[in-house]
Image (cartoon, rainbow, N blue to C red; front, top):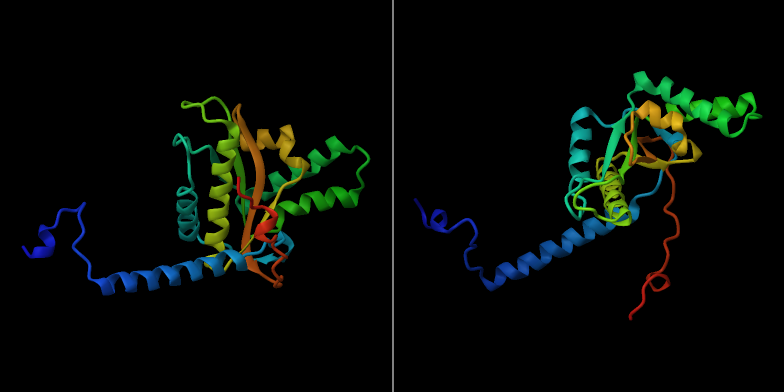
Length: 218
């Protein structure tokens, strides 16, 4: 057994001054990579997403990133439902019927456009917030913060893999027909769709708000 193996797992060997300099350089590089990843990500319309989408292994990796989201109370107050290509027609009919429920006078073109939304992205997830009674009783707003972080992790992970990602929602999210299709329980709410695929047409980054517009000191 060598000296390194004798060091308890919770302890680290003493580091030379040069190690700290190297560590600072690594941290700078990591920050720069993270900054580029975050600031280069854009929301991509499902209309501009082509196959292939993530493989099952890639999807599993992305979901493991979602699992790293902050989660007060360890409730996992969200989940993602994959709608495979073989089931997209069922989702398309829900979108169409939800439109007719809201607007009985919808045109055939509008109804067909609603259906088509279910078929655009190579991979489609429905993000569901779990806001029902749980123990501990973490407030719904905190649970939504966790869900937003989980979705952001998915977005950034997909971007890092070379995929484009777009979030879509709309009034169909509130349709009882969608709840029935997804077999949601009381306290569960569909929030948006996460659409992932290869970008067919690049899009420039939107103008970001300046920090002074949203930051202040008490």
